[in-house]
Image 1 (cartoon, one colour):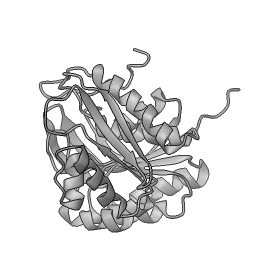
Image 2 (tube, helix red, strand yellow; image 1 turned 120 degrees about the vertical axis):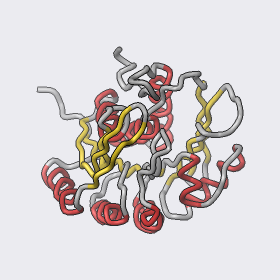
Image 3 (cartoon, helix red, strand yellow; image 1 turned 60 degrees about the vertical axis):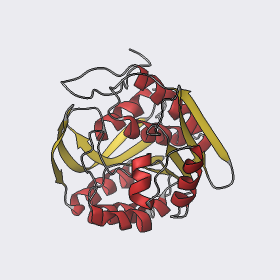
Image 4 (cartoon, helix red, strand yellow; image 1 turned 45 degrees about the horizontal axis):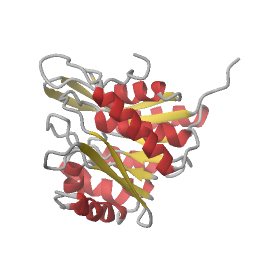
Length: 266
């Protein structure tokens, strides 16, 4: 009998196209050697061209899924993604309060295609209730603007963004710089807890098929934490994995294709 792998729970929405959301999370977890479990918060009708519809699950359904997994199976790390509404954000924050495992919060606000995935009314709940539960928060630059009002255009701005996100209570902020303006040969992310800084650089690939990068990175960080890695080491491992997935991203449908979650064994 083989030993049981670390256990990671994703609390997120479904992407029917399979590139992001719950589907991306579970693929990432499998690729990185942990057992993925899921709490579905919303269903989207989604493909390579965008999001055609969103249907939230009732809060009691989200709570029942979470309790069913955590109370029986247990968990070594939790990742949150699309939570859609203030009611769902509040419910998930309440559930995380007594879980006792590292939490990676990906404050999903819009899809790769620019479709809104979080109600404006939920932003205050994310700031006040969800981010304080986070071991690591992983906003991209659009989500930084959504949450803080800051517009980031350079690495100095990423420092200001990290300080603003940390002020809401997460232990670490991982500011993703993939949307920085300019033609750079590298993509940089900033990981900091307000005391130490880690600048994570990777090659920038000329590949438009990048659907699911945010979900994938956050799930990879959670997988590393579940395996017992310290936050900086988990972030570096996650950055390496998602960089390879972006390099191997492939066309799907007539729009933006996904990163390749199976690139390590393809």
